[in-house]
Image (spheres, rainbow, N blue to C red):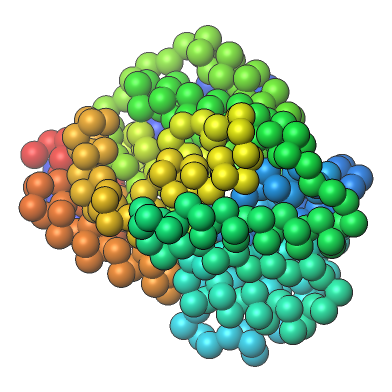
Amino acid sequence: MGARTNSPHRRRIEVPLTAMAIAHPPILSRCREVLAGGPTEAARRWKGPAIGCFPVYSPVEIFHAAGALPIGIFGAGGSVELTHADARFQSFVCSIAKSTLELAFQKRLEGIGGMVFHSICDVARNLASVYRRNFPDLFIDYIHFPQNPTSSGSLDYTSAELERVRRNISVWLERKITDDALRESIRAYNRSRALMRRLYQMREESPERVNSVEAYQLVRAGTLLPPQEHVELLEAALADLERRAVKRMDRIRVIVEGAFCEQPPMGLIEVIERAGCYVIDDDFVAGWRWFANDVAETGDPIRALAGAYCRQSRPSSVRHDMTRPRHEDLAKRVREKNAQAVIFAPAKFCEPALFDYVLFRRVCEREKIPHLLLEFEEKMWTFERARNEIETFAESLLFE
Ligand code: SF4
């Protein structure tokens, strides 16, 4: 759906940020502190080994069970100048790959002894190799997830791959990773994922209760905290948010899709809401809330993680599932969540997201779901154009 601009009926639906943040739960200040500290501060606080996890999904339980803190590395969010990484990648590559590499060149991953990458796209594959070549002292692993997770051999294959990762981590840290420790870590991350699902449920039911930036910060903090601390933070935040006095605004309910790897600037997330939308679902930080329900806490823990990957993963552009096409799943979510529109927010040059956009758009057109494309990159400083487009889009639905 094309966004109309300069409509004679345009009315600014802006809600001042101060109004959006009324009765700001104090726990969110803690959350912002954690985010401001970033990966190095997270590693320093942990006082043990830390391993960086490039998006999207990483089997964090294996690292955690080895006594290492898994830390989400989502690039530099526009905070570094590229002085080395540009020379190692083509110009038409997403920002997250380049800035993740730059972080290591500029020694801004202090305290992080290893990095894990996954088979999500060619860029991530190359990034793993470039890291290995340039930083031989770092532990580097690359996880090959199955191309077809629903085939009959996928469970055995994924279990073998995760066992290989367990062995590698064990050798690196010179520490045995027991099944008991793994089950304990599965329990810990299950709890934090369940609370994140509750947060998203809250947004779906009453999006005025928690704005998108707050929800994003609450989830993103989990990529820098041990799961037990994230659970405490989420429990406190959810209790505060339940009590928050709120008033529903005149906005459209949207699903944001496409930002599963590189993360949109916080300013863009804020603008989507301020320009007239309630974001009732999205795929931000998707890998850290990857499962639709709990991973099995009993039995063989590696098999449980592999089974969860093959059978309980969320639909994603980096995970092909013949039995559950992700574009059909999007249409289903729109219906079930009573969304009025979809905003596609792929990172610039993100092939998995941009290839899928064609399929998503086709299904939106078939189902007559209004949609808007909003590409972003890390170094996006001004949001005026995005704001105008979203405002026009939202108004066209509110006042049609
Ligand atoms: S943003 Fe897209 S292209 Fe870049 S590493 Fe992530 S999935 Fe790959």
